[in-house]
Length: 192
Image (cartoon, rainbow, N blue to C red; front, side):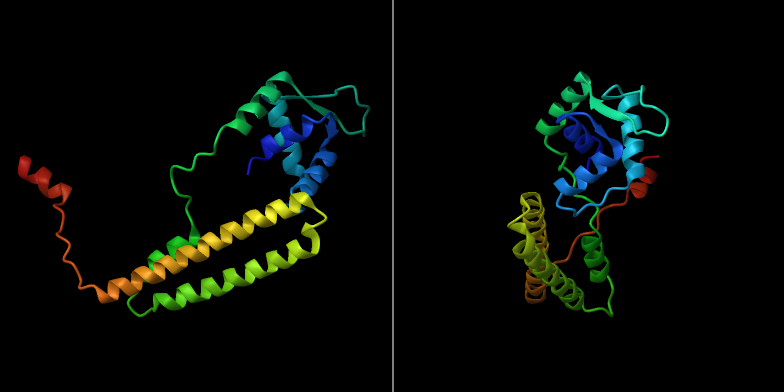
């Protein structure tokens, strides 16, 4: 998540204090992603260093600085909003790694691992659905976040189902001998 760009977005609405930015960030994201106020100020310092925001240095001692977005900050925000995220490589997903490790463990039934995670994901989906029913009607941002999470969890469950289906097909199909690929060292040794 780009806190940097979220803060630029909030500042595009007008000047704000650091604590105000933290509060508005949490409100706008349905209070799903808490933000440490220290992270807000560290990010604001970097944004100021990069010329994307400026602060009101005339604030008296003890009062908070007011931050405002600069023209360069508006440009940066526009570029970020219109640039798709890099999804060319899959993220390092702990569940995928668990399944891959479980496949190599001879004394472990991979289906048990799949079932434990499927059950947990269904419970999470139920919790998110209840939250949406209880509060989503009144909080548009929360409803969008919950929809996103429900779609994400659903896709993970479908992936677990696909793994289960591949396991079943692999048990039915006769094993195929995979030819061993020549080792690079062997090829290099032959060429010398």
